Image 1: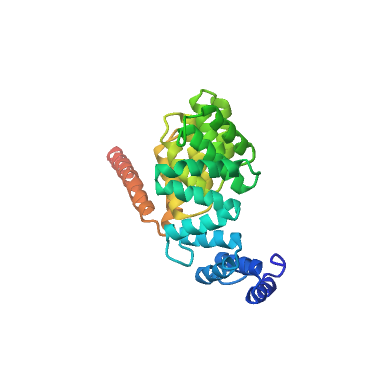
Image 2: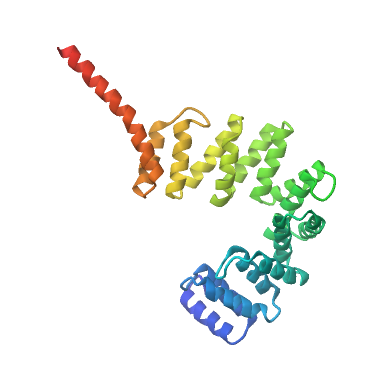
Length: 301
């Protein structure tokens, strides 16, 4: 119904939510949060999540936690987010367990690390959903860094590989970094290409600077590919970043013509840095043109 007649779907879901059905309250809250078939209203979404959570629905309680964590409809409140995740996690909600572990890790108290490890391990061993994959990657990081015991490189490689094969782009990236360090450059590059190709722009924006800062040309080339894919979205900042990389030749020969095209598009959309770059690129060109004119005039005289 949402695909074929979203307005009708919203009406039915709203009616069911108002009638007190917790699953409908949860779904209607998500529609309001996403702005799907209805004007986006995070505050109203939070109110519906709270109503559903009051019935004991762990999914709704997890969403209340997410709202407090991300500031969706309410001010960011890490303590309340953690409290909500704790309640939902105790009820067996998988995402809440993963979210709780992440919140505890962000808190920075080493005493919480054993519990975080246990939460990630239980979630990693529990299936192949997105939450399970996120837990696998986090568990591998724990084992790699030795955050809750001795470092376990073999265990980290196992969990990164498992999550990578199931399509988790962070696991693919982390697996590639380990394989690069151990000298398996060819396999590492294959995983890195998959991570760049199959991820989203949020992920690409985070890894591109890391890759471009590496001494290996292959890694910088993958960073440039990430910037290229991001720039396809047309955001001025992304166009500018890709243009700078091309202008500087971070992964090969400089491409001033390609950079200039990107800067022009970014400048048209209000990016001040791109405008400045264009001015800087024009100045040498004007000097060359003036020099050529003077040479022609001298030759004619």
